[in-house]
Image (tube, rainbow, N blue to C red; front, side, top):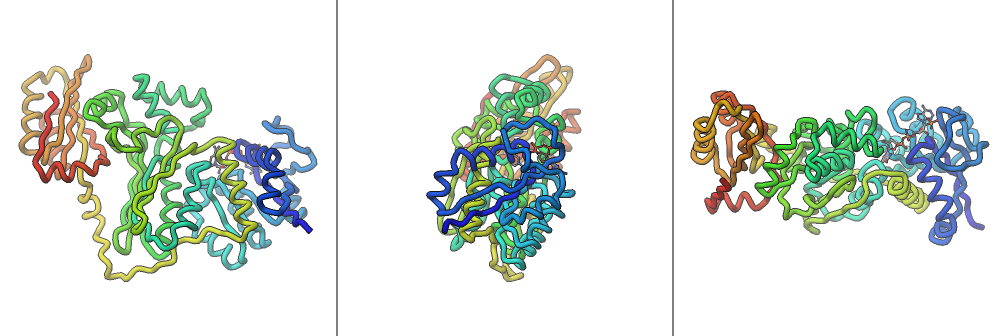
Length: 438
Ligand SMILES: NC(=O)c1ccc[n+]([C@@H]2O[C@H](COP(=O)([O-])OP(=O)(O)OC[C@H]3O[C@@H](n4cnc5c(N)ncnc54)[C@H](OP(=O)(O)O)[C@@H]3O)[C@@H](O)[C@H]2O)c1
């Protein structure tokens, strides 16, 4: 006889409604593919009177978690988000031997290790594809399809809101504030955008990825988080002239027995596939020691892409699959360097100096002369004049940031430094191929 799996859905907002829609529209296909039926037996919400985006049987809705447990679900889906009371509900679900599927990046970044331990003790599945990259099957790939490979690096665009804002700033010449307002009007950004624009959301996601790829035995040796609130339109224009687009990149990189995490606005050359990832799309690069580079891209949020990831995880759970953080242990003597070496290892940097117009041409020429002879290896430089200011942007290798700052202070200039993702620069600095665009 065909088994019917009982599902409890915690939350019926954007994601929960997407899950309900897919379970309804794809019920027949799912039944044929899995040989199982799925029945939603209860839905936890905060407000029973709230108008819903999707029509559901009112008797399914409850505000009481006890009513959910009373219906004895086999699978609990967390589409409500937050830490409290969600974490307690998920712990209870695992204790009750329910499989858990979650979209909750905040909870998984903070308590993923703990929840994996509980799930292992109770022998239930814990899957959370929807928490990173919306519908992109990145966590399933990392956890289940790259087991022989040792993943050395994962990086990409993990936040659709900031990618949308940066795209609009570039394509429509909008200021950060204007692009944010537009994103809010279109529903791509929250009324309180802090989690997205300050990089917390992307950082949670890269932490989840790092836990899966590097397991519980490794330590994060360095971590850095900078959002996009400091990105200016002139900067986008000037780096555009040098052949780069600014993207908020999240990266997790293994070095020996440790790893580093970073979320920072980064210059990506136009020729790189990540430069072409626009608007609300996400993209993730994975490097495995055997397979080499892989690229995944797709919609990083929204009811249907996120709902798709959840429904696929439900099917994975009934097949007996679960996510498993990397189990390999690394010998302590394996070289992992130290935090300082990691920071210095950044191959190239972009520096944007802003001088007041009053400082005049002499200051600009002193700066250009400094950049071309004393600041490090100069790959390219360009200038842009606005009403009040002169902006000078340079791509440099091996520059000492303290020296750059000292020179900026000396000229009363403002200095902004950015990371650069450009593998070709290392070769260029070796060949001493300096390009000027003046
Ligand atoms: N939106 C996306 O595209 C997206 C993408 C990836 C991951 N996620 C993650 O998915 C989760 C849900 O996001 P969402 O956008 O769907 O949120 P949402 O639209 O705000 O929906 C949250 C739902 O949870 C319910 N809820 C919240 N707190 C509750 C509580 N204490 N008790 C009972 N019910 C409660 C709300 O009930 P009421 O409706 O009665 O208020 C609502 O139905 C979050 O972890 C989010 O980070 C979202």
